[in-house]
Image 1 (cartoon, rainbow, N blue to C red):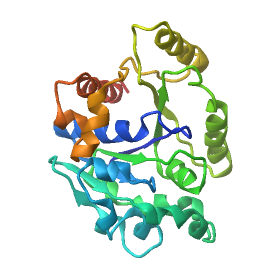
Image 2 (image 1 turned 30 degrees about the horizontal axis):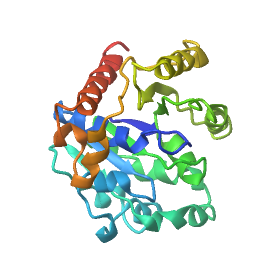
Image 3 (image 1 turned 30 degrees about the vertical axis):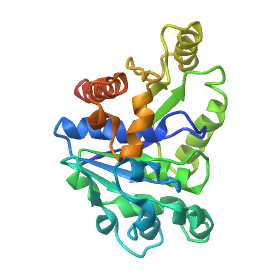
Length: 258
């Protein structure tokens, strides 16, 4: 049965999609069977796998609105064992539509039920908000991975995010423990980078796993999506690709140590 991991932070620009795409690809290259659910109306994860999002008719939107099943929306990628459920701008109106449904918070959970038998991991690329789509991802997921950008305001809004996660756990009886905190856009050569890393570890006080792996600032991570490829296949020797492959190994080691 797959572990479902929501990649979540309500702040934009912290590397959620980059992490979803490249961690998924790195694990698939290690012979794991992976599904990425693009739950962001921007559809950047979809584009990163070389899928023309505006031409996709079977998307996560048509799954959530009950037109098709999750299995019907799954698309293969160029990487063996790696599949994606695409997204596009049509998803932007889903929150209003879903809010009218009874049990709207668990629609994604019901849609993904059963498909986990085919995969080792399912990653949900969550939009930068704390709305209905995010609530659905928390209810559907087994755990949460939080990317945090190595910047001065890195922890701003973190209390709101943790509060939202706590409310989902208590009111909806659906806990999603933190799988790990991942520092992105990190430069160990700068004092700011080192200070932010130490602040993150201090903030979480040893209660949560802060990944030893950090993701550096790397132009190849930004270039790869325009070529319709994850960085780990676009330029496997780049520092960004090396970092995500290291992160994949660290994630697998966490499972081995359970």
